Length: 509
Image 1 (cartoon, rainbow, N blue to C red):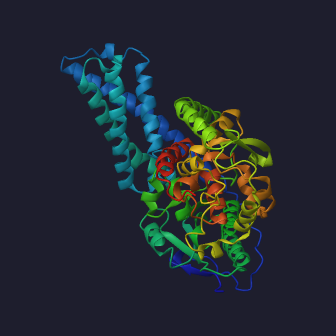
Image 2: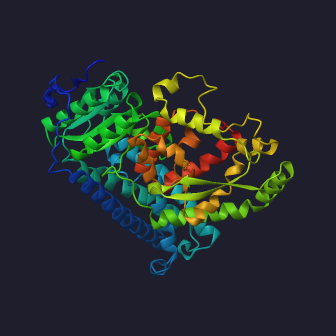
Image 3: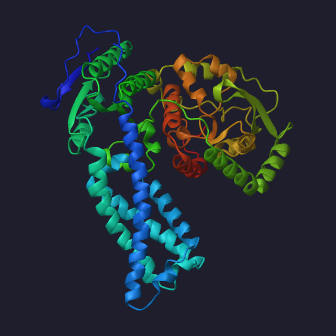
C-alpha cells in the first residue's frame, strides 16, 4: 500500500508535512472560525434575495417612467398596488433558485455568474411574461414594452450588483488553502480547474492513491494531522470518493467538517445530485456540497406537502391502470392482488409495505434471502469483478415463481404503484432509499445503518442513475449522500428521471 503523500501545488501555501509514522487520527480542534463560512453563505443568500427583489421593483419603475415619457402609460397607474406583482416576483425567485443563483459558489466565476443570470432571466421572462398575458394580469398595462424593458433593465442592474458588489462582500476574507483528498492522478483535472478560480488558487493535494484494505486508518490520520497543522487555514476540502471506500469517505467528510472547512464530494455516483449543474459547470467534475453538520435533516412541511401532492396525483391518475393491473393479476394466478411485507423505515421503525403481487403464492424465498445476504456481505471491489449478469439486484424475473403478468409489472415497475399509499400514510417519501427487509438490516455493518436515518422512498438516486448495476456499498453511499444534500428541486428531478428509467427497464431486474 502506498502511503498518503502531501503534494504542495503552491509552495507559498504549503502546510506542514505529515509524519509518516502517524497511524492514529490526531484529534482535530474545533476551529474558532468554523461557523464563519456558513454565516457568510446565509448572508449571501439574504443579500442576493433582497437585492434581486429591490432591483426588480426599480427596473419596473424605470420601465414605466420611460413609457410615461413617451406618453403611453401613466406612472401612478402602474405603481398602484396589485397582487400580480407578487406573481412575477415569486416566479423570478423560484427560477433563480432552480438555476443556482443563490449558491455562493457562483461568485467564483464572473463569466459563469453572468451567463447563469442571463439564462435565468430569460426563463423567468418566458414564464412570468406568459402568465401575465395568459391571465391578463394588471401589471401589463397593455404594454409589452414595460414587461420586456423591466426584465432587460433588471438583468443589467443585477449583473453589475452581483458581479461587482456581492462578490467583493462575500469572498474577500476567505482563507487561502484548498485541500484536495484523493488519488493525485484522478484529481489532476480538478486541481487544474481550481487554480483557475478565485479563492481556490492555493491548492494542496492529500494523495491517498488507491490503497489496500487497511488504508482507511492512514487516510483519516493524514487528513486529521494535516488540518490540525494549520487550524483555520483550510477553507475548503474536496474529497474524491470514487477512489475510497464509502465508509472511509464518510469519515473523512466528518473530520473535514469538524475543522470548519466547507466540504465537497467528487464522485460519479452523485452525478444526478448535481441536477442544477452549477457546481458541475464550475468545477467541471461531478461534485456536490455537503450540508454543514453532516446530518440528515428532519422532513420539512414543504417536503411532506410535496410527498402528499405527488402521491395523491399518481394514485388518482393511475387508478384506471391499477384497476387493469389488479384484474390481470387476479386472472393470471390464484391469490391476492396485493403483496404485503414488513419493511424497515426511518430510524429502524417497521411498517407494512404494499406492492402488486408478481409471484405465485406460498413460494419459497430462501434463495432470495441467501442471495441478499451474500449481496450485502460482498465487498464493493469484489462486486466490480463480477460479470454484468450477476451484478444485479435480486428480483428473480427469470424464476418460474414469477407469473407472466408479474414479469411485465416488474419490467415496467408497475408493481411499485401501491407504495404511493405508503407515502400518503407517512411511512415513506416519494424519493428516498428503498426500505430494507428486517433480515437485510441484520446483515448491515455499522456504517450501513446511516441509510436508516433517511425516510425511505418509492424512487431514489440509485434507481434513476445506476438502477441495479451497483454494489451494495455503492448503493448505500448514494442513499446517504442523497440524504445529506437533497432538496425539493433534486427530488423533482429524480421523479422526472424515474419515468423514462422505468419505461425503458434499463437495469431493472
